Image 1 (tube, rainbow, N blue to C red):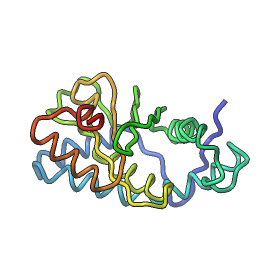
Image 2 (tube, helix red, strand yellow):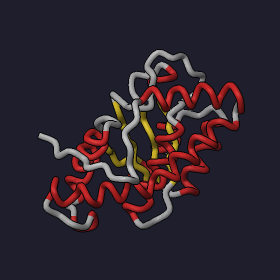
Image 3 (tube, rainbow, N blue to C red):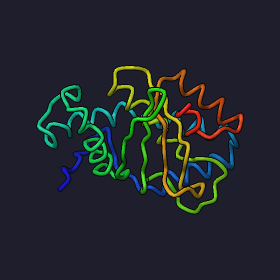
Image 4 (cartoon, rainbow, N blue to C red):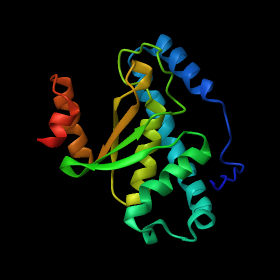
Length: 184
């Protein structure tokens, strides 16, 4: 059984249709600049979501500080938190080049079958960037590489050091696959 997340004056609940509507509206009005705006909004939410995680953590795990969590259970704890918050369950896997992948088969920002041309969970990318940076106490960058809104079977984000993610971005822009880059 999951432990519910207690919302406060800084965290509100909104339906996932809000995220889709914002993406569509901003894309229509701003074109390619919409992605950066949505990612920035997600990044701005990261601190408050992380604070919510810190309040939720002791009740769910009995641990007050995330650094005291056993590394082998961290992915399960984070999945339970994001699911309780309404984003959906996720899995975390270590990959090459010091990165992790975050995979979601159901994700609040995704709109399966919407036919987007690129991964489109921009708010999530910003949110995860800030949240994981706070959790790891190091700079982190996050990029979505697969997206249900684009027609992929799941959403998958890659998180790692900013310079690694810059390398990944350049490789993807050159037409290479993300797995090839991470394995290489």
